Image (tube, rainbow, N blue to C red; front, side, top):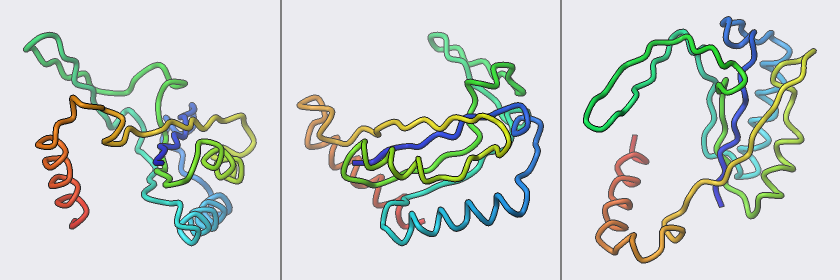
Length: 141
């Protein structure tokens, strides 16, 4: 099972504040533990929303909305993707994480990623083959 582990943004991450050396070292150690255990698939921090954009879809129309975005508590500061046996295992790994924003309250969300078998009969053999080709191409990068 794969899970995306979402680090929620706060006012400091949205202001572009970078973590100090201590937190970087703690996160590096944690990420190394994840990698050595075979849990870590990917993980990155994100720039603040002031450097981002959203594309709003309305029928065939596309509208670009440039950041920053006001709803800080709904924004993402970073993420990991875990490969684990269960939701419980993903949560246990997250509980071992350093606090992403030391000295303040922070939140990390755990959400399961869809797998091919979750889509049922609508995900035809042709679509599955296409998905496998795409994954193969992206893994080569």
